[in-house]
Structures are given as C-alpha cells and as structure tokens.
Amino acid sequence: MGVSVFVTGACGLLGQHLTRELLKSGRCVRAFVRRPDDQKFLPPGVEPALGDITNPAQVRAAMTGCSSVIHACATHRYNLSSERLWEINVDGTAIVCDAAAALGCRRLVLTSTISTLSSASLEAVNRPPERTPIRQIMSMSKQAAEREVLGRVQKGLPALVVNPPYFIGPYDYRPSPFRLWAPLAVHAPIPFVPGGGVNVIGARDVARAHIWALEQGTVGSRYAVVGQNVSFVDYVALMNRAAGRNVVPRPLSSALLQRVAFGRVFDRYVVELLSRNNYVEEKHAIPVEMNTLEEVVGSTVKWFREDESFTSVSAVARYALREYF
Figure (spheres, rainbow, N blue to C red):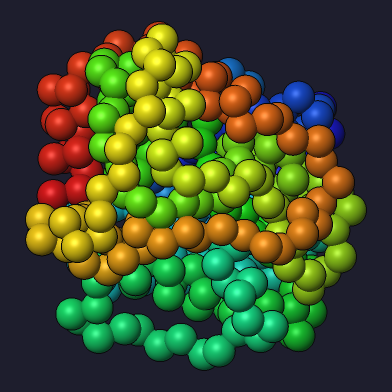
C-alpha cells in the first residue's frame, strides 16, 4: 500500500466512491466518520477515524500521519439549523485547512460544486440571515468554503478545488431529497416531475476526477467536472426504464408546484430551481473517461433494487422524515 489519504465525508455518496477508487489505486485510506455506527458503511480496507468536523483537536488527531486530504464533507440535511449547517460546511472547512497546514500535508482537494464557477472570482459570503431558505444557505456555504480554501493557497496551503454537478450512483446510503427518484422508481414508475433540467454525472466518475486532481492538479486551480445536460423528464424516464417500466413522466408547471411548496425541503426557492434548466456550459476540465448517463442510471437503480432498506415507499418515507423534517 502507498501513501495515506485522509477522506472527510467518507460515508456520503461521493465518499463511498472515493474510498473505493483510492483503495484500487493502491493507497491507504483513512476515513473520518462522526459516529461509531458509520463505520459499517465503509468498505473493507479503510481505516476509520472518529470525530466531528467542527472539532479542531479531533480533526487534527485523525489527520495525523496522512500525506494528503480530500475534503468531501458537506451536509445536505434539511432538519439542521442554518447555524449548524454553516458550522459544518464552512467552519469545518477552515478547521480541515488549519490541520492540513499544521501537519504539512502535500495536497488538499476540496469538493465544491459547479455552480460556483458561474463567476470568475468568489465574492465574500457571510453567514446568511436566519430566514434565508435552507437550500440557498447550502449553496452559499459551498461558495464560502471554496473561498476559504483558495484564500489559504495565498498563504502556502497546497490546495485545489474540484467542481462537480449533480451526481448519482450506487452506495447511496443517505440519499439527498433529490436523489430519492432512484429508490422510488424501483417501487413504482414516477409519473410527474418538475419541468426543468440538470447536468448529471456518475459519482464514480467524480471520485476518479478527484484522484486525478490529487495526483496531477495544479495548486490554486478550480476544475470543472461536467456530465450530461438532461431534462428531468428524460432523466426520470431513464430511471423508470432502468427499473423495468417504460414510463415517460409528465412535467409539472412551476405555477402548480409553487402552490404546493411547503417546509424546508420543497420551498419556493427549490421550486424555482427545479423549474429551470440548470444546464452546464463549462468544459470538462479533467481527462477522466466517463460512463454514459444510461450506464450511471442503470447501475444506480440496480443498487437500490438490491438494497432492502429502500425497496418500498414506506422505507423511503421513514428515511425522509428522519433526515429532512
């Protein structure tokens, strides 16, 4: 085995693929997890390290002995307070940077998002007002975390950023609300979707892009990882087809969705987001061969079909109530 890589967010969808791909490349992997129970989600061969991303001493102790860091930890839990979300996504990033600098890590790769590339430079983002929609706070926190990392580059931290779009894949033990289409499609065809669109890529491809950045990326750079632009109608039709049902969903109007928007998960801000084409015009910046969208959707649905915890609407509902409400 080779050098050790410290991975935060190891139990998330991207983290699951990062740990697997890093192991395949011959590296030792230390996964930072918050709870002892989280260790059951890690693949064999990964070394777990317990701690909270907002605890500087725990982060530094866990990172000690690792030569590089992939910081993929960011919460998408809607039932957190906006303050706690900011602490995890932004303050946690600053803590990881502090530890990497103090320990002399040779490289730090931050997982950000493609949306931060919409402007040439990142503006300062302060903690948002309390009434800001939670989904908007998540986006703002990504921008603030990226600015934190790139600001540290000016102080000598050998860091860079990978900017993926919306991604899906197997090993999604804690899916975000907008990745629940796959387990739902396994149970029954999805008949209706928002009228917008999105850029989609496989989580494995995003993980492989991170490893390329770790090995060959230029310090201070931001690397776009781009998948396929697709309407929600066509995307969910692929989901239905992968589940064995040739059903093309009908698009719902923004006006209708605005009337039924409620709560923290599906508010008016999210309706507006899902009703427009969130397509990506950026060029794919990392020379990693990608799977087709059909392959990615097929492997995702297959994994959910084989996972007993997501084979019914009631199971999905229990999960959603626990994680998001």
